[in-house]
Image (cartoon, rainbow, N blue to C red; front, side, top):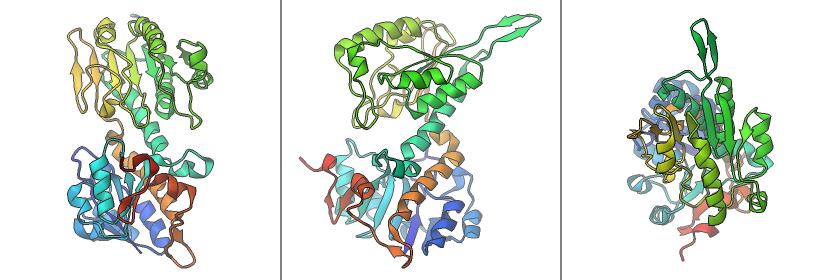
Amino acid sequence: MLIGVPAEKDPAETRVAATPETVKKFIGLGAEVAVEHGAGVKAGVPDADYQAAGARLVSEGEALGADVVLKVRRPQANEIAALKSGALVIAAMDPYGATDAIQALAGSGASAFAMELMPRITRAQVMDILSSQANLAGYRAVVDAAAEYGRAFPMMMTPAGTVPAAKSFIMGVGVAGLQAIATARRLGAIVTATDVRPATKEQVESLGAKFVAVEDEEFKQAETAGGYAKEMSDAYKAKQAALIATHIAKQDIVVTTALIPGRPAPRLVTAAMVASMRPGSVLVDLAVERGGNVEGARAGEIVTTANGVKIVGSSSVIRLGATASALYARNLFAFVETLIDKPNKALAVNWDDELVKATCLTRGGAVVHPNFLPK
């Protein structure tokens, strides 16, 4: 049983799919681990650390030719060509809207697993990459905002006068939003937050922030059984936008985190709202890679508007490569561990397991996940 860890192809990606900690654990389960030379450098893990943990340093081809291939992002075309038929490929596959890539994975004969489709059940909490990475993203978003903001966050009383606290507004109160609220509060900001799910109001207030939303009947029904936000009606969006527009004009910091699985990110902040903000204000858009919540946000860039407002569109997670890798690697290990027959120290995938069914995209040369079957 060979587990391969290739280096990530995206030049902006700093994470790696295994750490020396998880390498040791895999070896303890009877696996051999092959790590591509330099795979962990951007995450602060030199090759020597992998060797000390018991891994072999190999070429890209050998890492991709393993029985189990662990990646951060979905394999690119040249990587797919190197996969072994029947191999298990486990990564954040970003499958929505990627029909050609998923078909190519199926054509390779590999069984591809999308970690972001992991069901949100108690048993799978330790495997939830969305939560582990979003938690860090929320923290880093506020740190990035503080770095770009030209004033202090906390209220300061000095002999020279009082410095007012920054006003921070968090839009979207999932894992990332809750951590953003907590971080902004720790830095001394006055924090408000909004979400379309009614259950989040209590969570927001428990962290010492104020909840802002149009709380009508539609709002009370705005959550799926899986705990995700529902798409709201145009009428509700208009009422919410009017409330948010007046609120944003008074804010110094805005962090947006709203994502709906399988759809482009909802537009929460219009150009007119940005124009209403004071010069020096900062917006951080954590949904920028899905089209963005903020009009004018650009992935990988910091945009300064005509009225002196900064829109930060850089990824927060990849700026925490070492910590993000440590958590992501543990998520992957927890899942892979369920695919191994420990007494025999061999792969033994239970294709009827609810975790396998929920995450398996391709198997036996075909796309098998019901959400991505060819139409």
